[in-house]
Length: 411
Image (cartoon, rainbow, N blue to C red; front, side):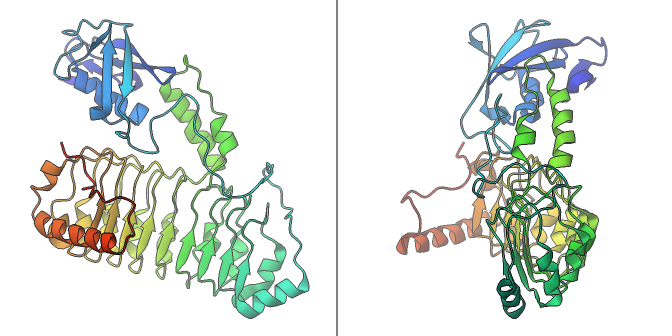
């Protein structure tokens, strides 16, 4: 029997012996500790959350030979202090991709947005009387790509007359509680800014009872997160703790339980943040139709998501999911489910049996195979639906390739 040791490793419960290996991957060294009786497959499982590379996408090489999954480290003649090289197969990763020595830069849509010191309140757009009157008359406040560092005071003057507020692609950090004064707000766009857990006044946001669309995608400070240390001699655990501490101050890492008060919400866009989970109160959003939460760090989904019975489209691609709750099968209106680049090994048992409108399923970069999918009850009907949809797309020439892709690896 084996138990957890230090640094996320594994030690033998009988002898207490562990060995430390140095895994060479993408220009850095990852120290891991585990029992010499652990198998190579155990080592790969340990490396998956540290590298974002799925186990079947890992090739471990020691002294010029590829290590076999079923062999123990002792049988493979791997001793304490050994150096093992990890090679990753392209596409077989979870989350946003393999963890690199130099993190890739997020594509920023806002143009030439200058660095914004925290606490700056000055906006860089002047609002004349004509603009203000037009906002009040139409109810639409369009301020995207205006290089704003703060929400202009004139916005609050609009009060209940405002129905749409578009602040996408700016450098806004603070969303004050007084956003609640826009009591008739139906659509709120705050994507591609610098909003963090500590700078958004959720009390004001969740008071917008008429809100149907909330967009908070792509909110994190690249410069801060990319400045995290990546020295080879610093352990992965320490780097991850630093990353979490920085992320909390410069990005969105969590959604509040009060989010469940937005019972009129139909679309929630929270992609490309640093979110680690969803609140259980998401189940109160019974009118939610579109949930896009791809490119985050979500490892578990609450079972209450099964209560969101209006969901039509769900995207959890590029997260850290290893399983889905069985309650996913309750989403009978679901038409599109995107789960690529996660550590998933299976799906809810009744997904194909009860989700009879499901026709799009993306499972690229997961552990799920076509052979496994064919064992699910209801697979044949789902397969017929997706092929019919694909043929319609082909007829109208709306797909880029004539090859039909099952959306799951064949082997």
